[in-house]
Amino acid sequence: MAQTQTDLLAPLGELAAFAGRWVGGGCGHYPTIDDFAYDEEIELAPSGKPFLFYRSRTRKPGGGQPMHTETGYLRLTDGTVELLVTQPTGFVEIHRGELADGVLDFTEHVLAASPAAKPVHRIRRRLELTEGSSVLAYDMWMAFDEVPLTHHLRAALRRAD
Image (cartoon, rainbow, N blue to C red; front, side, top):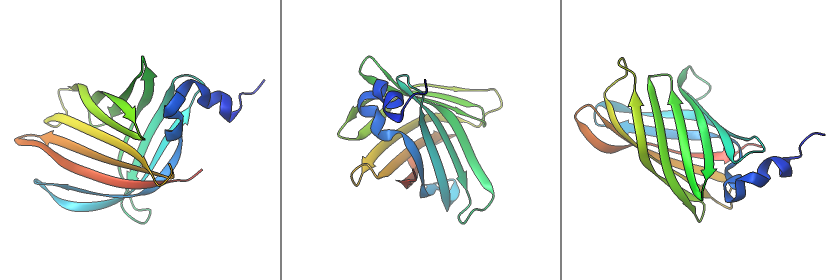
């Protein structure tokens, strides 16, 4: 018997509100690079278990060339939410946070890098559901090379399904 959408979302509790496909745009800035804009699609797919599969893909605005991608999981464990992210640039991130009023404000737990990865020393992420859960907004901060933790990305994505 096939699982219904309700069956797939049930183990997620409040985290179920984040499930879906989100599309929109964002902007990036950092002291060592020129400001830039991007289009993004984030998929947070339910599995019938207490986690969402996470995939983010960005492109230059207007359907241009691919820019960045990352995959992982958003999972509920013992009342805490964990975000696990793998980047093809050689990074693995584990963040932990609490879900309150549609906001996931994560604290970096682990940032591991391959020997060939760029010198990123810290990453901080925040996700927020706004406009009645029809918009997923996020911010990301990064410490790179000699630059301390600094705001890097901001986007607002609309629910596409």
